Length: 341
Image 1 (tube, rainbow, N blue to C red):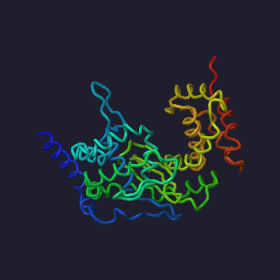
Image 2 (cartoon, one colour; image 1 turned 90 degrees about the vertical axis):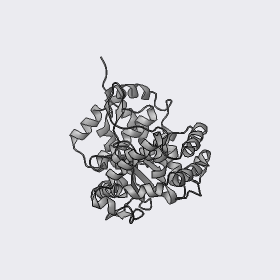
Image 3 (cartoon, one colour; image 1 turned 180 degrees about the vertical axis):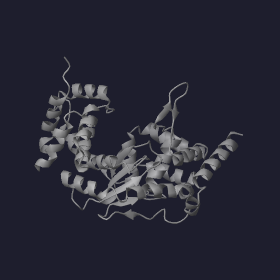
Image 4 (cartoon, rainbow, N blue to C red; image 1 turned 30 degrees about the vertical axis):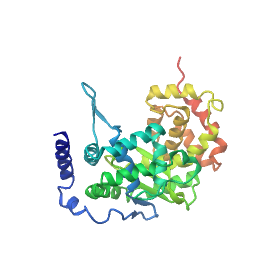
């Protein structure tokens, strides 16, 4: 009886998604085709990201806007995510068991799994990501392969592709100039190809990034009410900024960081470590600079806990390599934080 009910729910959810003529016509066709902006940024759907987040959702990934806290929290999902969750939660349980066992043995951050997925081969996932930095994740491609076949994810993708296509097209005319400016600010070579991937199975306004095959800069954005250009730029900046922070920022290198983080959290920042805070602050500074934001936008970011962000943004214009002034930039942040009396 339970499986029958789940089946009816999935059928209704997917029927709702494909009810319009445009969606119904799109169950076959251009899922694998990419879009390209005038400056050559690739916009595409990615089977690996779809498979990965299908697995995450099946294993309890429920991040999203909470519209009700009591008596039971209610999390809202994009209609595509709602339909996919219903399908995978009621599908072949052996896939979930295999994923659960792998997660128990490899309790890495979600971003590590994303990096491994986009570095792996396309379905049927015969090859995992190469490179020593992801060696501990070896074997996860087998889990993705089980999900791809066991849950018939290729068919499911075909049923929701037009929603993805619509989201991708919304970015087509709005990302070129900001990305070009961000690339110049960070001195990212033109040979590093930026690829924007929409992921409707993630939380609202989520932004993530990973290094893909052949040096691709993969920018993964969740569903949003309008194109999340700032999120795309933050994801782009993190790929350059985070390796520097890993080497340069530590409690010893920035002893005042813990105090700044605590006060930033009180102001609304969600970062849980000094390094995460530094990453968010610098990437937001790059994004606002690339968007040619006004003073009000910088003031709003400072009010949210990213102290001194306008001064940090100016440092990117000096032409010096980021790794030579990162600690000086953080010390400026420290002097700009509110002083409690």
